[in-house]
Amino acid sequence: MSIENISGKNLTTRQVNSEIKKALQNNKNEININNSEELNSIAVGIQEEVTINLEGEYGDFLGALNDGAKITLNGNTGKYSGDNMTKGELIIEGHALDGVGFGKSNGNIVVKGNAGDAVGQLHKNGAIIIDGNIGDLAGLYMLDGDIIITGNSGKELGEWMIGGTIYIAGEYQLGYNAKTTEMTSEDEEKLAKLFDQYQIEKDPKTFTKIVKEQLRPFYGK
Image 1 (cartoon, rainbow, N blue to C red):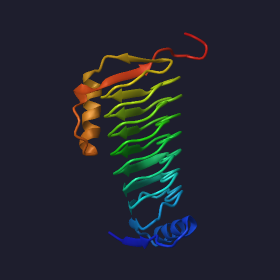
Image 2: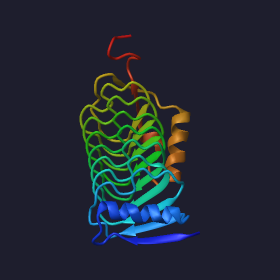
Image 3: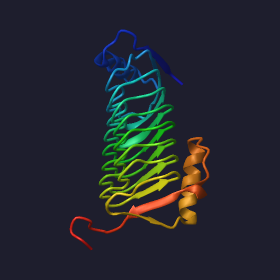
């Protein structure tokens, strides 16, 4: 394995991302970054299947537009992590602010702590797992894929959802066009597989399943 270590100390966002680009051009398949000083838009638009490990506190749009990388942050991050991600993985071993996985088309995002409002809005495929509590309006206009919350949700969970599935273990308040339905053995198997993959200690049998109420919520059935 070819490894590149990058110190983000006293560097700008552009300089850190330039160092990442150089490492990729040199065929590095693991990149370690630390001392970022809460920079925004780090590791954005990565198209290679590379492992990127980050240490410290990061700002907004971490791993946005990811198209193949496995990005792991040992720390906390700001808003819109994994924004419009299309492939790969983003694993945050801490907390994230609003907008986790906004517009995500595929791949998996895992937050091992709490997240803010607007988790998985316009979510299209893959999984978003929050191993903690979230804020309001998660799953707004979601089209497909899974949002999994091991803690509590704020208000209007699944508001105007069009497709996909939300699983939650804690307390919640449903939004318009969201309803609860019975968990199946297939649901439990899916959650068990994801929990095993990402080392999440939660019993799938404790979750509530939430789906859309109407096929066409804007126009009626």
